[in-house]
Length: 218
Image (cartoon, rainbow, N blue to C red; front, top):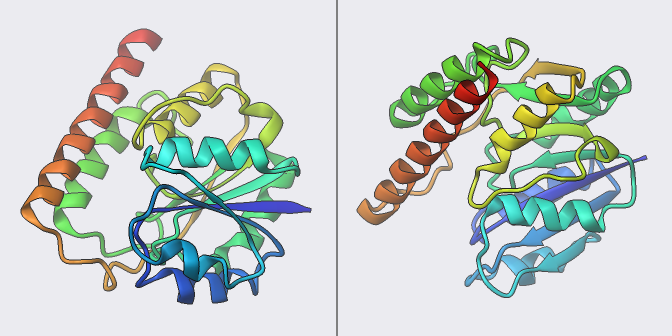
C-alpha cells in the first residue's frame, strides 16, 4: 500500500484533469490545498480523495509536511498538482522504493524541454548538490517516493524542503535512486512580473541553501 500526497495552490485550471489521471493510478490520495483562493478546493472535493485545507498559504514545504502527518502508509509518493508531471510514473517509483529509501525523478535524463529561466537555475543548483550527492541530478524535481519513517524531521518554508529532504537523506546514509521523468510545460500559466520576481527570489534562496549545505559538509 502507498499514499500519494499532492500539494496544490490555485490550480483550478489543472487539478481536475490531473486528479482524473491520478485516481487511475492510486487509491489512497491526500490533496493538501495550501490556502487556494480559487476553485481548487471545491474541484478536488468532487473526487474520491482526502482533501486537507490550509487556512492560509504556507508554502509547498508545509503542505507536504501536513500531508505526511495525515498519511498512514510507510510508502509515500509526492507529486505536484500542476499537471506538469504525469501520474503514469507512480507505479515505477513505488516499485523502485522496494530497494531504497528515496526515489527522485530526473527531468534531464528524460530530455524534458525545460523553460530557459528554470533550466539555468535548476542546472546550477543541481551542479552544487550533485557534488556531494552524486545520486541526484535534478534536486528540485517534484516527483518523489519515500519511506515515511526515514523522514520524520523534515522542515522548511516555501520550497526549501525539497533540498532539506536530500541533505538529510545523505547525512543519514539513506539509499537514493533516481528515475527519468518528462515534464509538460505547455500548460504553464503566463508569468506576471511579480510572479517572475518571486520565482527568482525563490531560486536565490534555494541556491543559498545548497551553498550552505556544501559548506557544512566540507
